[in-house]
Length: 423
Image (cartoon, rainbow, N blue to C red; front, top):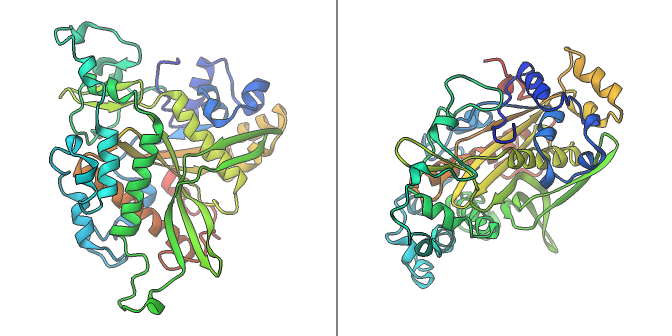
């Protein structure tokens, strides 16, 4: 089962996958080492024991659709104030010859810091060395970690594997380019997402706009920023101490007499990877990332552990920005009303009583988008719209302004209907 993608969508499918993986059903059935493993070492057994249910990939996160209906980019609404000049520069075609331009030239473009980061992630320093064998029969070579279209899209639904109904928005990347990009460290991707977020938050979105010119009238001392600092969360689950460390994210800051202080570190988590070992080749010969079960388990672990350690701050769920090379996608985790009780139960008997009670909801539900390629204007637009909608979602949860004084929700579980698994 290790080479099949986890795609459990309802309790019945979870039961079937459990039977295929040693009949593991609850956290207490993990080994001592597994129960104490940090999120970075979680596996498919954690996906099952932590009871993850997944909705199929979508073009836009369902939980953010109401906010996206008022998007200032797509609908010309006035719910958020946008700098149209900088936004247009971001969404138009990438600079010509981006990968061969010098940093000296790129930094002089509008938002030059972002174009430098994008070019750095997109360049293929080792591609010439890889292409010294142009006559090889690619279609006949079976390579570890690469999935053909025949095996990636089965004829019928499976709890371990199903295809997205959306194609990835992809600039053509051939097999050798993919190999070359795998040599780039994940720090290159982390830097790219930080730069993109900074462009969106500080050049596209006018956070402090009030229609006046004086500093005294510039609105609020609250600001949303990229969080470049990694955050480690340690908490107790089922009696064991577990930890997770993210790659940064989006945070809320407040200015006081001593400078700026972080109010909410977790508007969204960031988890970045270097180019994935696995990819999928579609009928047009384009390549898109495939998330392994181990990577999906790490996403889940970071969301669960961060949520458990900050339940009051994250009552409505956790957003996670996943990135690999120049690709980005958005994930949302919502936790069932009995999930906290399930995590607090320290013995197998209590955990089994909770999961066997059909009246209880001890599941975590995940929504996800398709992959967006930041090398394309359309990919950048989709990512921009998600960040704007995410901020509006946090705003709507408190009834405050677009950078409200706190994002702690008083309406836990208000999004329950949006994540029902019954279609």
